[in-house]
Length: 270
Image (cartoon, rainbow, N blue to C red; front, side):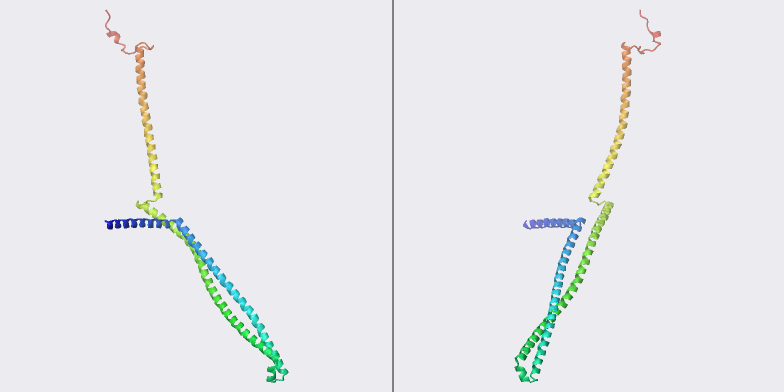
């Protein structure tokens, strides 16, 4: 028993699911719904493209920032190169003052100052150059990524335009297919749409109107005949009444109830 109940419940559920699926399919195939769904998809895609543009804009901003850092570091490197060259020139001047004596030159505080400055400039210069090389690598990579994303976003924009065209084509195709189906259904007698029903109602109304008009014409003819019969009956009755009035002396006209030769055959009174 419980197994039978379970089978029945599943059958009902399958039937309900089938009806829901068919209703959903019918709703989705409605031209207005199709158009609205395309609009939603187009709007979502346009939103993603705008986000994509924002991301590319951020990458371009990073590229510009790194380029500016490279430019600033390049100017700093040029300045350090000059400072380094100046420290070396001054140390050379100190060495000349000591007639090229290495020990005296190295012991000179001015020489030591130039030597320390030269070493510091060299170390700083090396760091700046490494940083510039790193930034230039980043800028090159960013440019490659930006160019690749630009190509992709151009493809996305073309696809967006194609979706707008596809929307109109899809709606037109659905409408055309629906009209063809309705015509085919009408020709095969399988049409269940409202248009066919309205045509049937209009044809029935036309037939009823024609029938009413025919009945009215027929009734109008019968009324005329009936009126003629009534007039004839009235004329006969009127004539009989006139003769009766004359017979009893209510009329000035003498009744013609007996023939003229009746005088010859009348029996004389005794």
